[in-house]
Length: 273
Ligand code: ADP
Image 1 (cartoon, rainbow, N blue to C red):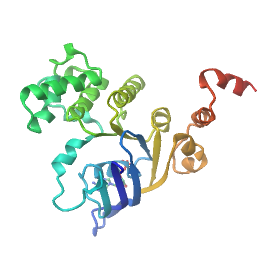
Image 2 (image 1 turned 60 degrees about the vertical axis):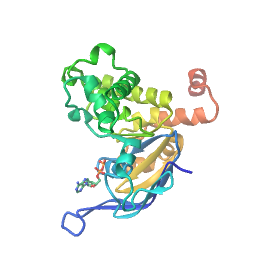
Image 3 (image 1 turned 120 degrees about the vertical axis):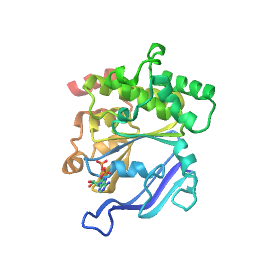
Image 4 (image 1 turned 180 degrees about the vertical axis):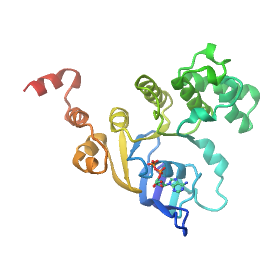
């Protein structure tokens, strides 16, 4: 049984007006529990729209979406429960930090779910530890933190809900190179620690090449490729036509890794040959 399944999903913004825009076209795929999936595509290709369907924030114009085989598009489906199981970290999530200090901010979600003050606090502490925020920072105002730290606190806010699936929309957008790496490393760390499903979107092929285990490529609202990173990067000519600069070197390394080479030693021998 898959964890999330899309079947022929279409989505049209502002249908029937002059602003009508079909943002998803006949999208079908399934996600297994514990996967680490990257959604790549040019700006405007439909990544955010796709993501917002996964926890019922947007309802498809047509098609079906299942969470553990239950149809989340059905009338009366328990949306609140779904949103605690499928957590989304939106773009620039730090804009949503608002509490007086870091710990209170992260504890807000579980408290809102109806958990006790103490349990919410414990969940917040666990989440902050997972994203590497130190205890002495718990009492700071979120606004006293660096860009990368603010973003990690915002991710902790979603983690504190203990979701089964963590979805991050362009988690590294707008950060300097050091903070980008910090955020992406944090995501990999918490994936390894918790084993939850992680789905992240990015227009950066480089980031995805390094981290994701499976890639979905969106182009003009269509899911045009779905496969392992080395399979996807092997189609770099097609990717380039979509405005995605494929990392050829990374493709080469992924291919070699797939053939059983030890990259730390063999890559030099191969490229010298
Ligand atoms: P991405 O996340 O890949 O940048 P989006 O899902 O945000 O792509 O957008 C897909 C398409 O839908 C784009 O053409 C975008 O302009 C359009 N779109 C996104 N949000 C809205 C909206 N609220 N109203 C109308 N069109 C929208």
